[in-house]
Image 1 (cartoon, rainbow, N blue to C red):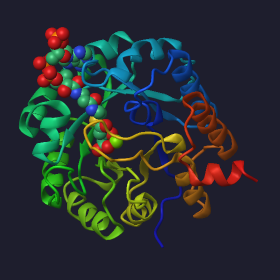
Image 2: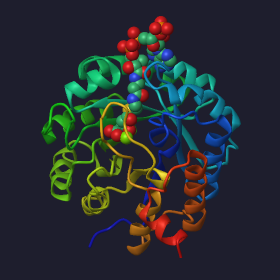
Image 3: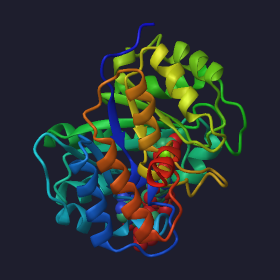
Image 4: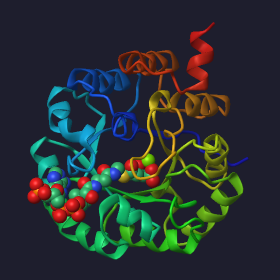
Length: 299
Ligand code: HMG
Ligand code: MG
């Protein structure tokens, strides 16, 4: 088996995890979540989004969250930015790295960011220029890489086309999102085989929602395809406001358990990660979505 020795976990719980929560969540709870996650050893946390508050109200306080966190050296604190306006707000909040997001499906692009795929890519051009001038790295997302809630099946070539465009415009890494979690290990490998023809595999990341319970096999399939960066969400928090029925990202604790079992380094402490997840679940009054956390906490 040719598996990586180490994996970088991109913790998206404070953003992807919380963005869909309908109940108000205090800035203090969000700040504590981010600080708990970095205390557990995570070196990359997506803290929030600078998007329209009309579209995603829960992320409206992202600047305050950035102002409240304890920034640890060596940790990247990132935010989603859909356009130049969002990028400028992120800069003001002293965000060190941003992410732009496009979709592999036209219908999802319209529902999520109110424009076509082509228009979204055009919108990113001035953002990329501003980011370059400000020395801010930009990560790129492609949504719906293994299926779309509106368009159904998505051809791997279509994913490759959008990923290639993001990479060519300067995204240092492209995260491939199974937004609705319908993908399977076989589909994951076929998609990566096609996308990997144009983009080096060490510039790709996997972002799996766990709606159909396939995220862990998909991560394992991705590891076999040479991918070594994965997005996950503590306690499996989340869902997507524009993908009805989609559940959260794969739980970070469950990914960590898989990787530990394979002898792959992450730098993350399981006990502290579980504590971080349970603390936010308690604050939200929600059941913990991580199987590993539930098992460990019931011992
Ligand atoms: P729009 O309505 O087409 O844009 O929205 P607009 O330019 O016409 O602006 C409309 C209003 O929004 C204006 O305000 C703008 O100022 C304001 P008004 O004059 O009406 O008062 N506005 C903004 N406000 C704050 N920050 C901004 C911003 N931009 C405009 N950056 C837009 C287009 C992209 C803004 C909107 O559709 C939007 O914000 N969408 C966000 C959707 C989102 O955050 N989705 C969830 C994240 S993506 C995801 O979860 C998938 C991922 O996890 C990967 C995966 O799972 O596949 C990443
Ligand atoms: Mg997502």
